[in-house]
Length: 99
Image (cartoon, rainbow, N blue to C red; front, side, top):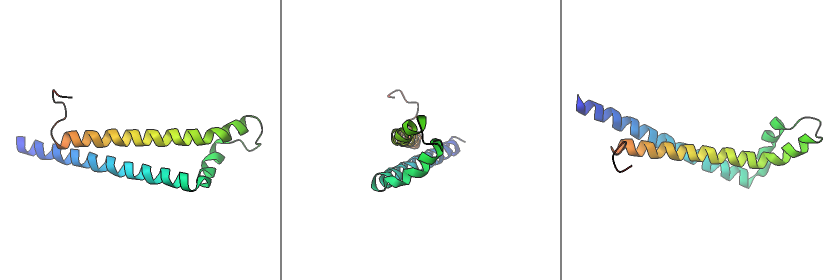
């Protein structure tokens, strides 16, 4: 019974590790695409900018770039934590005294 639990834990840990790594790769390529072609953020800018383009709309148009950067940072941070958790579970270090 204990061997079965170990296999399940290792499988879950490996899955989380691979999921976190895949999300990190996705975040990297998304960030690369934004820096290579900044025009790709225009669709995001249209979601938050009012159609009149006056006053608050101009401020929101400028705030689009830091907002997109913040969202990419959050995505990278979460995927790193997920991969780290998966690694700890896979190597049976989750919940050990050393953490």
